[in-house]
Every structure is written in structure tokens, then in C-alpha cells.
Image (cartoon, rainbow, N blue to C red; front, side, top):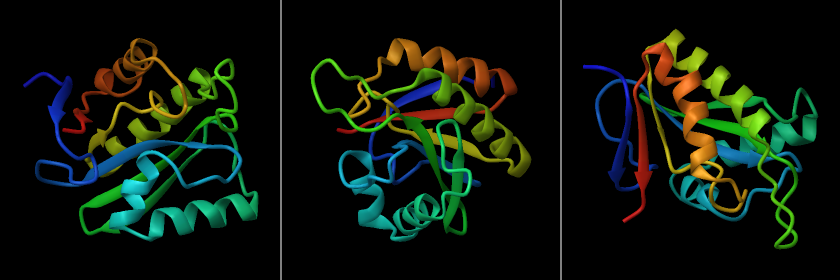
Length: 157
């Protein structure tokens, strides 16, 4: 089966399929965690938020384009990807940084390849970060699909 982006209705915090699954999402670069998809993550697991906040406090490589991987279950890992500059403060200010998302997706692909995982996500960067899916999807194709890794994109029902 050729690798592709699979679009399905469902909850990205309950990834489908067998094997190791990485759930990827976009975080901001100011340590804020409290709106959007992160709430769904925190409702299921405490570790991703705790690790993200500790990473922010440490300042250790906490910057745009970086990814933190947090194992939450035997077969599920959360990828906290810093692809958003600050938070949206006005209708003119779009926080998504496509170059940072590009870097994050490359690191995500490398990790998935290394551990034999599939990748699961909502439409990353298109909610609070203000991004456009027609800009994100080609980055997923370039960095992940081209490396033979399946991606599942969940549209919440």
C-alpha cells in the first residue's frame, strides 16, 4: 500500500491502528498551554503538559522548530512541536511559522522512521495558530509521506 495522508472523522487523542503511534500537534514558543487541541491531550494524559512546561522553564533548546517526544502509553507518544510564534493577539497577527513546522515535521519523520511508528494529528497549525491547511499539507507530503510513513489526519466529528 502506498503511503498517503488518510483523512478520517474522529478524535486524534484516540489514534486508530496497530503498532506505535505518534500524536503530533503544534505548540507555541512562549510556554502557553491552555487552549485548543492541548486541552484534549491534557484531558487524557498529564505528562505532555508537564513535560512541555518543564521544557519551557529549562530553556533547554526550547525554540521554534524543536520537538519534544513524550511517551504516554506503551504504544502512544505525543510530539510537542514548537511551530507557533507567540499567540494570536489580533485578527492581523497569525502565529504559525511554516519554516518551524517544516523543521518539526522533519524531526517527527526521523523519529517515526527510527521507531517504526505511524503519525496521527488533527489539522495541525490550522486552529489557534491561524495556519492554512493548503500550506501545511505539502510540508507533511515532503517530510513524512515521501519517507514512506503513513499519516492519519483526524477531523473531529
